[in-house]
Image 1 (cartoon, rainbow, N blue to C red):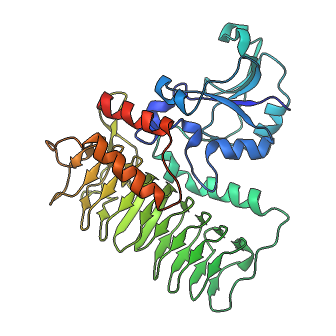
Image 2 (cartoon, one colour):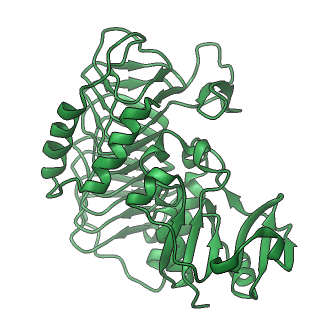
Length: 389
């Protein structure tokens, strides 16, 4: 199949907030890949465009009016699903639980009533429907990506200074990766160390883990899987079942569990995020679409943190905390369970961060990674700021 891919956020975008304030759902990372990157690799096809929020189009443009494969991005591919997708004819679609998963259509004159055949399939798929699924279903994503990346390949040598518990074949080191004097346990899942990534001495890792390219586990890090860390991150202290999007740091002591951390975030030293209520009750989380807290169905749920958010040293976060884009949290005591975007302090009545000063920080932080924000990224942040989401 040679049709370009188009990813649709229809019915999904609100469910992944605050992560999707700055990007379409397809650009969220879970495992080694973003949803888009995974589909591109599996189908060996490039992306033509995105059907998402209007203000995001400045960076993620709509597709050309041409024949495309329209995809729900937040689904983990499987051999059976890919076979069904590749067998699609024009104006045919695949449906799972009343939602279109894939459709081969011509966007020049596309409408749902022009789909000639809608095939409902009953085999099970790994379907991400909420932000909490990113850590709840991280194991499936990590194991899929590990198999996809390492198939028919040989790992770089693993230093004899390490102690490996379980199958050593489930540890894979890319070129330039460094792991010394650490404990690597694969009995619960594989451990993948990306290009030029480093696991420093004294780290204790229980898979499944993906450590992205150029990322680091600092001295003595304690990592419980399933955990996936994107590129150019620094991780220290204790983590358990978290997903880090990329270019973010939690470099010091403190515990974060059952959480998702966006891009360009910084977690101050000894920041701790509760992931279990004292009464062991089901955790509630803020629902942006319904504008209220709702049950997650989860007993363990820490925080969902949007891009560019920061916490000061010794920050203590309640179970089920939602943190908006560019929130800067530094007040004494527990902040509320919903911290708005661009909050200056993190408290209930705290002022809004000055936008120009926020941009200064964006430039300063990104320059440390050899990057600068482009006009499109600044326009998106400006929209979020003005909208007071």
